[in-house]
Length: 117
Image (cartoon, rainbow, N blue to C red; front, top):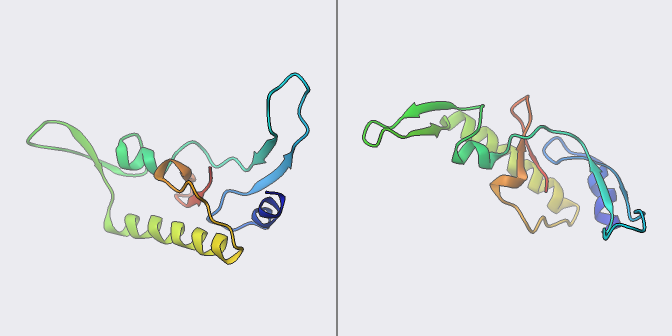
């Protein structure tokens, strides 16, 4: 656990940076510890794919009248490259995420994807 945290603290542009971690908690709390991570905003790839992302254009579905969101090919490739670059870094440090899903891919205001949890 600590070795992985130390590696992630080294930083990569496509991985949410760990700033600090501690197992010291108040005695009254049933907590295993605290991890302080960089703030990357609250936008995720899940929001973009399933409906609340602000980084993509909304289109109207003519048949059902439902709105859905569409990513351009260029944006899809950019997001994919960001995720792959983050995974390559983590794997090069012998770290496996184990819970990689769209909700754990954060999108910054600069429109960069960062792997987090």
